[in-house]
Length: 181
Image (cartoon, rainbow, N blue to C red; front, side):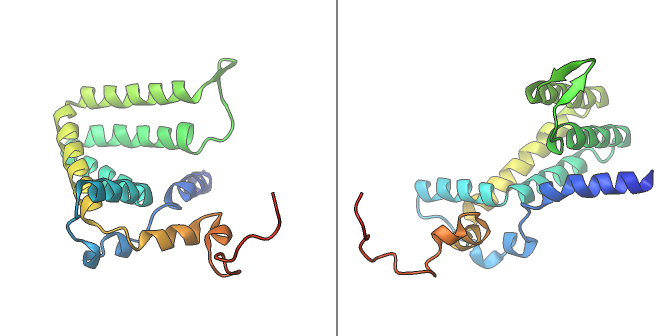
């Protein structure tokens, strides 16, 4: 049984953590500077949130967990719902069937949100979760706005499935095209 649970968590976490960027890159203080304009700020936020989405999600979960740390039953209940999220929504590849009916992803999403909301209300930690979530969002936006994105383009090209089309290694792309339309 423990082997099954262990393999389940490893297989479930593999695609979720594959997008996690190294913490040394995420926390590189030499890349923090003030953006020049509003446009630069919004571009940085967009690029950093897309590039570091798994890192930001981990930070959000840690801050939310810390905000309800003094409510162990709620923490356990939310851990159980996290397992439900992982197994019923994130790592499921085949359709979900319940009482002979296929359940849509949208319905699974709604049910899981309702269950999470009910657990938060039942535990009386709604205010803790809102404040913790607000703190996490402010910290993430602050980091995303201040972190330069100059180094992200090279990383994204290296990990892109279209890297061979984007690289400049195979020839001179400034040469005029040969052949007609």
